[in-house]
Image (cartoon, rainbow, N blue to C red):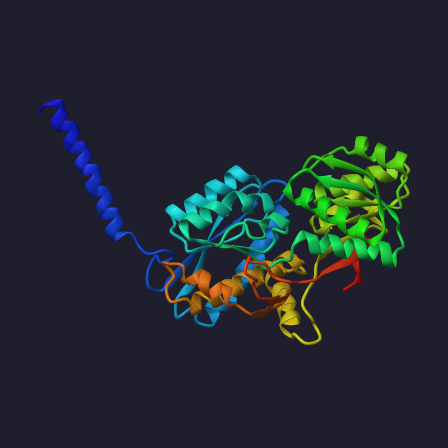
Length: 380
């Protein structure tokens, strides 16, 4: 056989295989008629593994409850988990795999805002819903037609902290320390606007690397500026270090941190240096009018042997909202899931999940103070 004819034969064989694949590959989400597979992306290893644990336990509990009640239209929900290790490249790789290989119609996560922003264009191109329970960056708002979140945005968090600091604690000056990623940058900017708008003064601004193990250089600037408090837009690794080293340097300014630091691991890293510090996080729903909150907490403790954090509650809600949309959608292989989500109005354990035209919800933040090595609510 001549070389040209051989090459032509190979090309025709590849084309034939591709055509067969296009014809026989299953529709999105369906391995068989009795199950619907969705994706989930979070950091299950690395520094952010605690966040991944919170997301996964919330999702798993919701899926168990959904399937125990008959699933969605008689089909059980299955979850394909992917570890993004907290970085954007792995998040994009995971999202592409879930879209092209696993053929999922929706993805729960990613956890971090920057990773959501990296995956948003893929979600729009593939018409696969991206539903996060944790990405609070203001830039996530309107990042794509297929991007939704059940957590409130950073501008709401910044306003909550600024108002509490200025009106309740009567602080008038703040030094801003922020995690140098999209999460921290948007919180920095939103807090600057909110605190100055209330009448406060920003006396310094310093960035810290994600998961920084030493922030003495930034804290030296804080000591020179002598603010009433430090606004710490950080996660728990660098937040714990900040608290410990601030005490070592004799800094007496209060610390008011954001939801990324509201984690038991922060207390382990900081030790008794955490006492008296304030940390905001997304709040729960109204427990007096919503018995589902107490039921969720009891079921979570029974299943996992620990109390749930709010991130577990948010991903529990995200899973429930998605399941409800799957049940109402005309098909799981087209844009009807997105259409069903836009009409959602689900009262979950973290509040009301009703999306605006940019995929956002309106929910409150709460402020906690560390007292006797515990996060104690001081505002709801």
